[in-house]
Image (tube, rainbow, N blue to C red; front, side, top):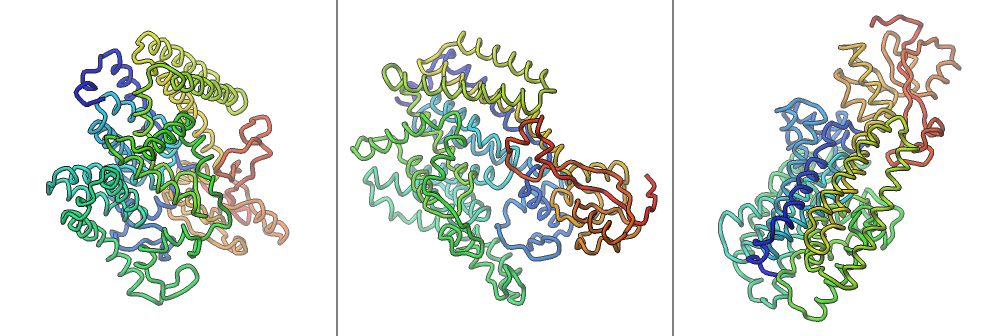
Length: 559
């Protein structure tokens, strides 16, 4: 299918796609106000907050100590956002979501360049409704930044491949450099493989050695220099600093090798004792819902056509994603969100397959697999309403009504053969995640005792500093006053202070005869992933521990 044909797709085909794209965008932005319920976003926020408060954008400092684990770029961006909008949850998430939307735009542009308007819309909708993408846009880490920078770099480098312009090569190299300054040098692998693979499979070997690619390498290296400089001044100039329990650490060496390849090889200072070559394959079954099953088939078919020598308009998506997926899989250091950065390429591969579905066994396979997945997702939604938050029945009813209305709209505006089931899959994912964002996440946050304690202190004791025997990044971030951390054994020395602590410290104080008042008790769910005892509201108490705000010596604290 060529671009001209696609651009003349009928409104009945494209209008529902656009409607659901708008719904998908709103869904991915909907979690921007949800407070942190995992540790990483709170940790990254503290690092960025320190930059914003001290105006020291060169050093990464955590609780007064030098911090070496991630490059600077997302912290620079978050710190600037804090300066503009204040230190809060929305200001932390906003720039990451802008970069995610950048990935959506570039997924559209790259797909449209090769396959036309309607296929580009399909790819965007697949990306917007991928389960782990939606989750990551609420629980924000580095992945939204990487997705936008990666897709932008690949798109502009491909334009350079077709025709050299200074604008494209500068943007492509800038995005590549910023991607490296977000997660590490390994991100040049999917960018490089995307372009190199397209040259190789189109048998244009001469083009690989064009002078413009040497210029691209040099420009990318120049754009990485801010990271090199900051690491040099913070660590290489100060071999006396202790990091990972040793001195003489080179920040530049860590950035260029240890931070990623050391982890992949599992011989760095941060190691993982387990890992499976099939980890990301079974992770994708839920992370790339509702598209995982049909995507695996589309990927298999794409690779088979490649091996058979069947020509394709582009090899960018396949060459950017498959080698990186293999590298992730053979690495022992594996986390579920690693593959999110490949989802735009997965979306392209799947969109091309779906757009060509008309009749036959493949369409039947697609319909059956998607109906099964939709059915399972609806069962999950019903189970969540019954077990997790039965008191939120009214939200469940509103979502069911929305599901019915959208389903009626889908089947009233039938387009291509694949489209009703495709849009139904999008509809179910959107409705399930509306429930997750509006019910599950807020309830989960309410069982984070450190967040609740910070809110209680800010409301009832404004301006009062807090002493904590529990190290908590969320408490530190949400407290409007500084938090002083102490050893549990020093709690008895904090007369006149409000202390945030846990049951073991209370038991210790009692055993030593120290008198204290409990100002407030907070239920706390200490894990990041949901377990069945916590999901089941009737057994939830068995999954909780408690945090406490106390004062010593029976001293009354004025509210």
